[in-house]
Image 1: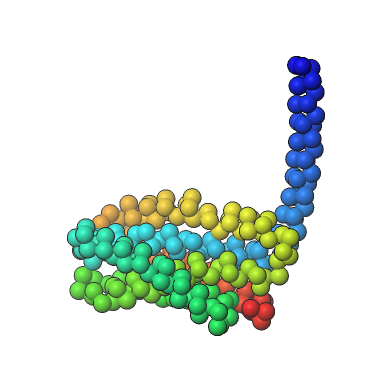
Image 2: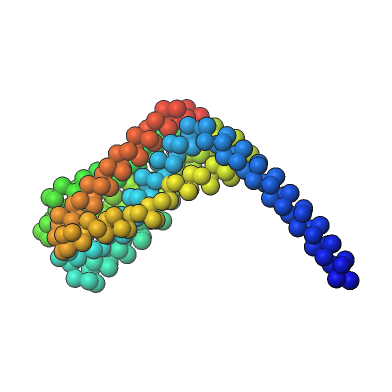
Length: 230
């Protein structure tokens, strides 16, 4: 009985190894094909820049407390407003995308992020400019959350073969979501260098502007190359 069990295990193990080798060979072939597609590289940049913007919205409540001098309850309410704007913006831009070119809307969303980032980075906000602060919050939230709602939606016009979609999504996500690794330490370092001061926040939002600009350029190129079929 033990001999039979060993033979069955050995047979199954051999088949598993063969299957793994075949899967690995196919996967590497798919990866090479996917990396030849310009749309994949553009989407990597678009999602990386868009997701960095999403991570930066985490500090807006802190900005409200340290720069706008809100108490902790009012600063938390700003965070609640952002949570409300997230699904609202996604639904709104999703409906608009059904009527307009989604690639153009993606470019517009990066532009909104850039405008919102400039409002925060410029240093023109103060405890007395409450209306300007909330306008900046709404603009930056609209840009960031619209970008998140749209960037995977443009894949279908990027001339990515259907059989390679899974591999493409995996590679794009591997690069695009790296802000989960570096965004927190980066803006944490900038804020720690100027604790409680507006200057640290300005540096973070200037960095956001840089990412929004690069992402917007990538989205614009994507729109020029693939927008006609959107």
